[in-house]
Length: 238
Image 1 (cartoon, rainbow, N blue to C red):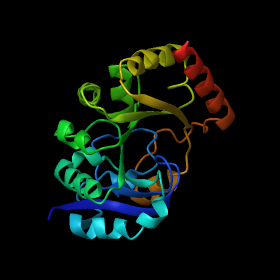
Image 2 (image 1 turned 45 degrees about the horizontal axis):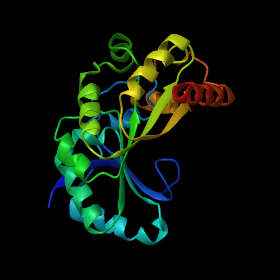
Image 3 (image 1 turned 180 degrees about the horizontal axis):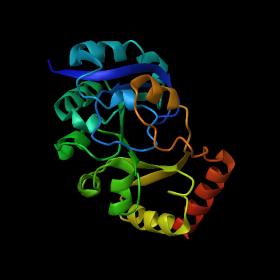
Image 4 (image 1 turned 120 degrees about the horizontal axis):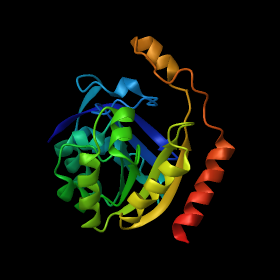
């Protein structure tokens, strides 16, 4: 039995992978994304300690709701930063025939090959398309993401790409062209989603006494974001 730290548990998630899903938010993240709306997941020492046995028993209770295409999504924080606990949970899900998804930035602490053996789907959140801008936006370099993509390409795991569109930061043609170059090198990509930047987490920053550095930036228009996504996909496939 392995113990891990989670931030929260959502029983009926509808946007973090296919079907109806349990979403397990892992505690702790090495990134400090300027647009993060869950800064309360950053600290590795906080959250709820839970055993793999406790968590799988909780998940099994919801199995009837998963139907044909639902399952469990391990999100965060960054689930890859608790690789032993994550791997144990993936194995237990496989044992109980539960579809598994990992929502990740690709910036973890290793054991990727073994983890992907038990993962049905990766929601890969690519923060930026160049190393300098990636570091400015997140506080870390792209090296772990690049390594993770290499491991994805040697596996059979399906991938959905996610990318947050931030006005003036990730919405330029130059940036999006570089993003295409990255995505073209990733195997088994089934879907690409552009997510509009929003400020829904700003109150959490106030509560935690953290500085929200993008507080003067207006949220991304949802219709413009969807139009960018459609154009991006069309030109990527052409």
